[in-house]
Image: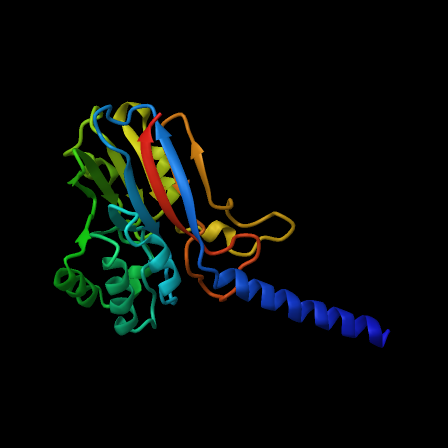
Length: 254
């Protein structure tokens, strides 16, 4: 009986170590996205997507792996949460700025802090917030519409407003912290690609089951959707079956 209890305790300790490892991984997933409606005369676009940083400090390992390989950086919300020092936020942004210009969309946890202070940091560092709006981003020999929708769980989202300055025949990249927004997307709106986080892939999955689907890239009838497991964690600094991840995406003509 004692031996059995010792085995159980040892197994539990090993599991906790593994869950901590999964939460602290520094993975850059390479995602090649081929889109039918990608402009014929535009060179492939490379972008780095990171979401749900929360309390983590971005690893130099990730920066070195991505440096020189991306045209721009997108932060898909939850850059921080309550209790995270702004000094850490600034270090993370400075690291990401070495990769390229940063575009930011708000997540629910970003609103737990002094948002005026956060906006001032963005202004100082030249980071572009997209709040229920779109901006035209020149890349190589082409142009894309970067569409940002504010956080839905805090009743700040307005998808309709975000589309006002877009056309379906342009290349439209939609960023929303909450992937649930995909239910509002219609094929005729011409959203070529949507990037989201928020769910952490369920964060802790038991026997393959989690509160949310594991992060994935999938083609839907109305758009192509990437949902990231995210880089940080919420509540517990542990993961199981949904390891931390970031994404280097190459977007090109199918």
